[in-house]
Image (cartoon, rainbow, N blue to C red):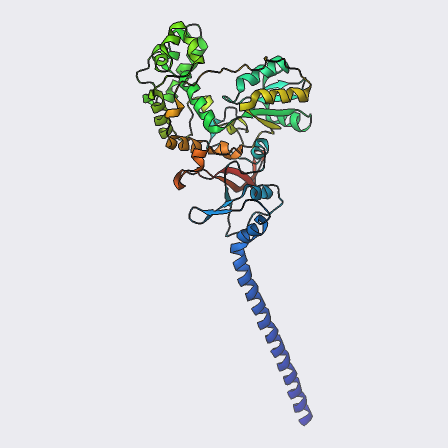
Amino acid sequence: NIAISMARDSAEIKYGRKRFIIGCLGVGAFAVSLANFIIGHRAYFQIDHDEYRTYSSELPHQSVIKFDGEIIYDGEYISHILDGELPFPVNNNLKRLKFRPGSLPLSSAQSLQKCYINSTRYGNQIPDKTVMLASVSDTHKLIYRNIPKSSSSTARHAMKDFFDGNDRRVKHDELELAVHQLDYALISFVRDPLNRFYSSFDESFFRLGPWMGSGPIVADKPRVKKWYFENKYKVEKYPYLYEGLPTIGHFRKVYCPPDELSISPLACNDVPSIENGTLAHRFERFVRDYDGREPFDVHMNLQVSNLVWGVTGNPLPVTKLYNATEADKGWLDIAHEKGVHIPDGQLTHGRRITRRFNVSKVSDATKRKICRLMALDYCCLNFELPEVCRTADDDEAVFCALDKIPKREGDKIDIFDELVIQQWNF
């Protein structure tokens, strides 16, 4: 019995030691886990800042803490995330990164490929839903996508006269096949959104004026007259635009010098406007009322809305976007690449009409509102903001966003996130 009792005591001692050792290991493991949790918890909320500081120390520009502590990220940092070279920061389920327009080290065409337009929100701005109207040259494997008020007249002239181009409607699959498998180049021209907005409004104002319903301009243009009556309801929500301007004669007297007008109405297109602010005031009032959702003419559409598919909002497979302010140079470069000769002085074909309203009368506040209206163009085409918009206050500032949205495959939406460029505020 003594032997049995001693054996039992010995076993209990060994068992107790094992329990003690196991308990110590458990406490140690818990302590390590707790420490990792605390460190990890802290890192979870700081990883994007720490990672950025480590990374940005090698860059000429760093993130800027501004607007109540929000981080404005460097464009180069954003581009590395887009390229997959850096992970999207993990920070309290953060899904948006803010950056400045024009800060990406990307071309307009490259930036566009990362862009997304909500085709429901901007449906009224997308001219072609299922097909794309383009000028196509099979001879030179060149496709030009038209964007109104972005050197489009010169482009159509160049495609037709020098590149054997013809207008046609192209389906999505046909375009993808042509660019990705048949080595066609898809090109277009873009310009600074603020300046384009001035030109777009000027053109649209003329096209929807009451003089398009009757009078000498449409006397022999029944199709233009018909189009006017089908679309004039779009400007009726802005009744002040044409007050006191019932005819083209009344309109011309506002902006055309009397001496030029007495010679020929067409002479008014070649001389500076004498508009004293009457038209500019109406323009400013329109900008205050306009929300960017329903343009009253196709010329008012965003540039990027002409560069996406209407069904999905996916960007077209654009090869290159040229600067419309240097359109002649762009076409000469294209001609050189395609082995086409364009004689000197034979390229420019645009309607170079003097702007009718006096832009110098437009206030800075109005310009900043236009920049906000055109934010998607500035972000997706990677244009720098003009100085007047870069210095805006908090509530008027324009920023871009690197967003996470459900991945899009054709008409289907995947559960996985896709990184896209959008405007910061909607």
